[in-house]
Image (cartoon, rainbow over all chains, first blue to last red; front, side, top):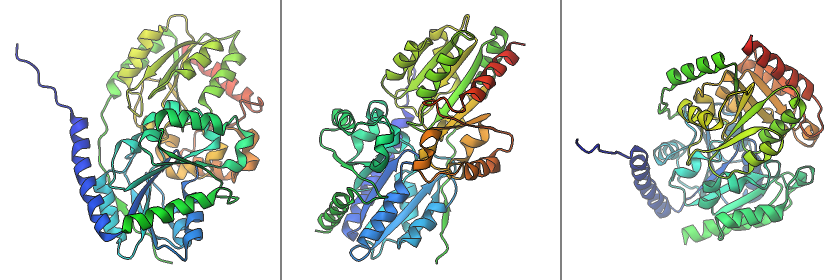
Length: 222
Length: 222
């Protein structure tokens, strides 16, 4: 009997995507625009963090934002009011962005004159972690109501991230949430990652995030 | 203010597993076992609700639980301690369960003597909504910290569900959360759906959920 050929479609799709992402990243490096992929569960505070960030760096950075959603455009209007150049990407049911979608979005947004562009990825702790969008940095948010056990259950997202923002620290006390346990669980997955507990609502912990962003933008242009 | 540009980047990658799901549902009907697909974001309280449910119906129903996770088995041990027959399904990176995975899990669990089986699906508001697992009922949880705008952003999950449980009502006051606005947003997507605000922690609102479950199990066996 002939040996059946096994085709790994998933891996091939990922390999093609990786090549496109690398090319996009190189072009953005030449242009001096830092692309940051912001990922989290639904409702963990991506838009609130972006709005507070826009307010904090208004005099220092020009920022673009690509809002990726299955549907709706409420977030794009929100960040535009806070001074960002914004486009809304509808994924048509897809649970993540890939490099091609991201490139299409950047063409529509126009990167000229922008120091940094944030992708506000679809709210999802699983699929977005698997796709390189061409971003230079990956930042994830875990909100305190979600619980400190999440690195055990959604390992890849914590493994691929450069920064883990722990949001909604102002309400941590109302939940069974331990920052120490979270840090231990995160470090098991990713010993190098930066962990930044903060509240975009009260401003607590925001400075280290803003300092990180300014430093990364400067290093990307250097 | 500039009008936000909306770009459609639709890609249809959905597999059709409807036939397998229909056959599984018919077999479970003959066996008198009600299969319920429980879906939500990560950290919205699926396991806490299941544990409180198991305690409440301990004398009346025999319940099985299939825990679906990308990784870890903490939830399976938790529900087992509360009296459920439990198995842990690892999806190997997959962001949802389909009918074939579900059937495999049920074979391992063994449905004999069980009145109801819950699938605790992977924490994800997008992909699980697209796949018929063979369950007879779909129940989703939205926790108050996630915000009342989620039906606008993750429409399909709200459209396919029979029940929307609004969890963590005991902490709603600490968030920008309006039950009235949530209900309005949910009804836009799904006028027929049952909406049940509750707190599995304090017990508030649990009775209507338990009554619904007992009624559905009785109707499925009739």
